[in-house]
Image 1 (cartoon, rainbow, N blue to C red):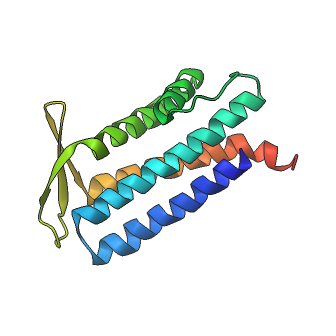
Image 2: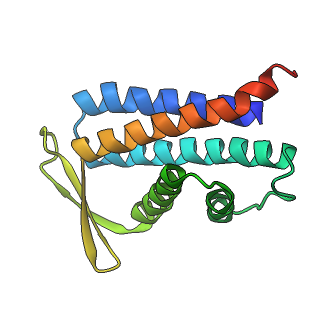
Length: 154
């Protein structure tokens, strides 16, 4: 579980770099997709760490293999309403990455990835990416609180 948490921190460092450096100098939809992909990876490692904590605490018995099943199990076992929002956003981001998309205003401040998913259009721009970034940061803070007590044991 500590290892999964450390992996999520390393992945978040990559998100940080992509968001604050790469996107600043290369305003393309490809960079937006990279940021979203790394956010998804950060969530996956964090959810792994959370589920391992839950297994250690005997809240769950087995860990699913599928990332979606892991998120749904973690969502089910977490009573916190704010956490449910994080899991829903993670699942939504996974769908967004698989959906067809178009580009608007590449190489400009308002670069946007337009995703058509389930009959609904979603515009992913730098401002929305910032919201996702902050959510991941808060989620990692929660996971850190859960994992901290196990660091002392090692």
